[in-house]
Image (cartoon, rainbow, N blue to C red):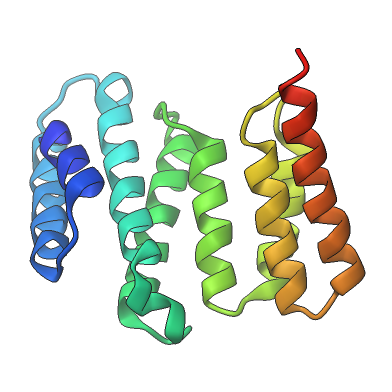
Length: 169
């Protein structure tokens, strides 16, 4: 079921794909309940929940209204994936899940919360993590929406600088 979730997440494009994705992750949830070692198998569930959340947050129709129901639902799935990793000890990419939550908060116009979370992410990411340019760019987007142009420019500069430093080594 995880493979199906990933394939729909990666290749899906339509509203029907969204319904199929949610249906598949709900089936994975039911299957997960039968696992004896939930923590070991939990990476499939935590990652699938994040895929659903990211899918719902990333669709174009969500970008027009912070009140969009799919955007709220996407944030719910992302929060659930983070909860499994942080509070239940499941494996999963905390940094990626948290980055996706920052994007969802940004789309929801919850800028102070998004900025706080993106700063936490930048403070905790390993120094050479390849996601730093994306995180800095997302911080710039948040700051732009908060009309902090100087801060946004600084974040964009850091994003480009970190890309250039990665390519030197």
